Image (cartoon, rainbow, N blue to C red; front, side, top):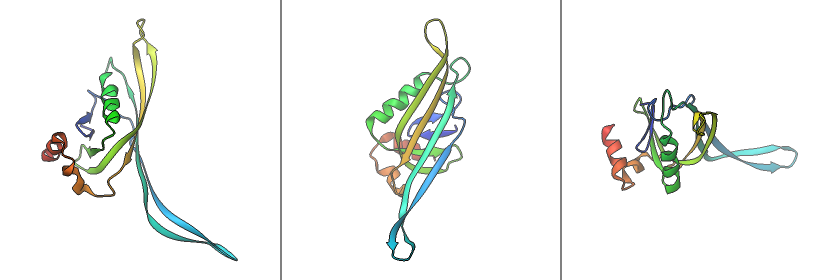
Length: 146
């Protein structure tokens, strides 16, 4: 297991990503001052985003159904716990977008190569105590495995 988003497990058999790109922002409000540079004040953490680009080669590794599962998860609008294969808990994340590029087609139109980019946003404000409080049996099961 590379990573789990809710009950979806990223692996060679499902969907393997090639990179995990994370960007965390911090907000600093600016106030103009006469005759001086603007004053800055820290006002809190901003967005936390993870991007997972990868390539799916159904003939060798991965499943075409994996992208449909992620789309279904995104359609629910729910937040999902994100847990690394090492056991590191990232918190609760929503699926913000899923981009897909298909190429190298079989005669019937099935793609041999699918490049994808999954974009996630964190929504829990560092409150990992929310992980078990979502009322989902799947979330509770995942946490019991940790």
